[in-house]
Image (cartoon, rainbow, N blue to C red; front, side, top):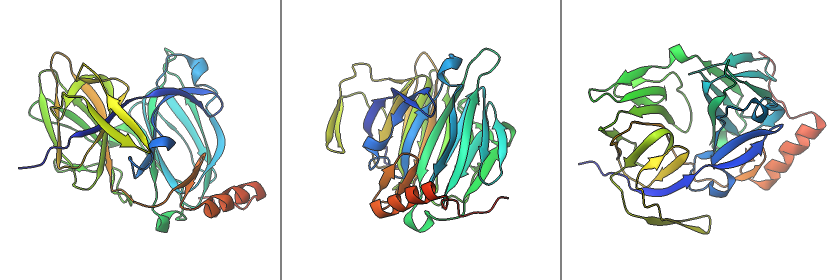
Length: 304
């Protein structure tokens, strides 16, 4: 019998401002980095106010990480120092491996109703791959397989292999799984997870009971003690779950469906030196990266 993961932590995403003035909500970031290893950050940039996102994220550097952008509404225009240019729209994904260094910009555009919707996940790279060649992968919605289980559960597979179906993103060193899952009302869904992997879920529509866990729980993370006193055991929109160890999660719905992003990856267990858009293993490496950016030697690659 598989061991069901318990919930370690539930957090509500919090408002923040990034880029040139983009209002978004952060599910987790710098403060919780060790607990979410190999993931570093998850931002939710859904908005129906163009003033909150049109200024976007002008040219800026990255090194040592991967950024994964998943769009639901509107579009994001992209350009980078390798010469790549593109636009990702509803259902599309941009998977960018910064590696040794890349400079890029991301400019959100609303749809015809002025809505913008999407998420950006940062994944860390292990020390031996920090200075790998950067690469950019753009995956259109039609390239992302969607499977439907007998109980009506729908799963879009961005990366990983689920029920015999492989997502379009592979060959990533942290062996990530990234899914967009919808569970109908009055349904229970059991999803197998890889033992030893960090597993998290971010609810984006509806609500559900996860892992049949109804009681409050506490967890210490980065020296801070979190104690969840939710009387309602259902996890809802803009709430993130970090799961404990185990081999599966169980999702149960009642009178309404739930849609959530499910992410997992192999933890690195390495030291992290992080400032802004650059994540290395030591402060010395971090200092070198910013010095190179200032003196014009940051980019190691040639244009494609």
